Length: 252
Image 1 (tube, helix red, strand yellow):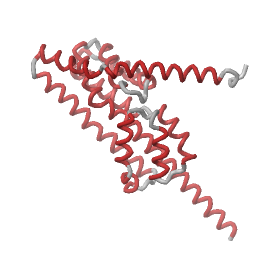
Image 2 (tube, helix red, strand yellow; image 1 turned 90 degrees about the horizontal axis):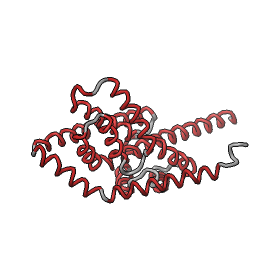
Image 3 (cartoon, helix red, strand yellow; image 1 turned 180 degrees about the vertical axis):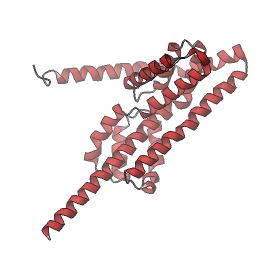
Image 4 (spheres, helix red, strand yellow; image 1 turned 90 degrees about the vertical axis):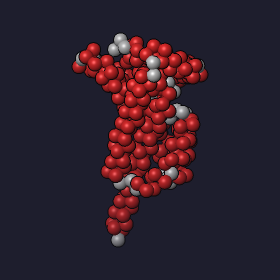
């Protein structure tokens, strides 16, 4: 029995699973505004307005930490030889459209067309790259969920040991593989981590983090996709130009 004998059936089953679980997650997200209201009401009734300061601190620290990823992507572009000015010229419309789509997997056709028109990339070359990266790039998931998990640990004080942190790191990786580019990934990930830490008081915070960073997580992922594709395309063009130059010298 060879690998291709049942490939189509297995792929169809996997695609059905993705579609089913995505639709289930969409149902959760439709009811999300109501639960967000309850999550805001719960700590206010229990602890008063002082809780809002803690929530704002967590959100502010998480937002400020995104600058680390921005610097990381900028360094990658510089090392890869990509023209920064040309890259950022068309970057904001790219981000705006991806934010409205909400999923890197669903945005693949748009991203391919956009990069082909605006950045002059080869559509044939980048189509498969965007498809693969949309399912494998975990930058946003791993960074945000791990960051928020560490904030949870600090908020809980001495209750979390090095063992907890190690298990959380493993959890974050596997959670990111489970739903790398689906709405609700931040909510699911932070809820599971909060329950693992036995921090029931952190559950409302997990809801707020999805509100503020659910869309940003997807933007981080598609930005990582774009950066990777831009670097690969620049290398491919450089290699092509170098090969053409070598052939010309040989002919001469």
